[in-house]
Image (tube, rainbow, N blue to C red; front, side, top):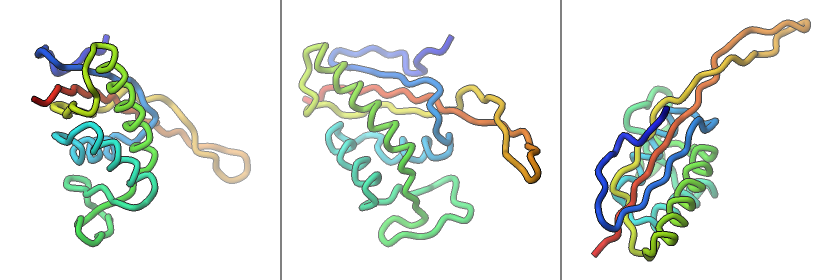
Length: 148
């Protein structure tokens, strides 16, 4: 069973959880770090800009062979991870509307990403053979709170 690591429940909070997304755990960690603490609408705009290639996500931990971008340092454009996390932010926005909150007044107070289950996959090789590999998935949770 998978549950939220953030167990505190405050007045005016909404949360959402995505299990076993088919994205890189390293990219998911860096994207979550980039939007943590931002207002919900600004985080959505930022992720959409990354998907469109207008802004880059700064990489702080996984910087091996990462090119520098102007104003961001070592950075990349993890489009697939941003699309999945953008969908999760849409889900938490819908949850906040269902609970009676205004999504424009919500702020991300907690967002975390960690490795999900790995499963067996195969690389196709020459002459009809293949090599095994492990596919990684990510679990992401987000909690938003209404700003006063």
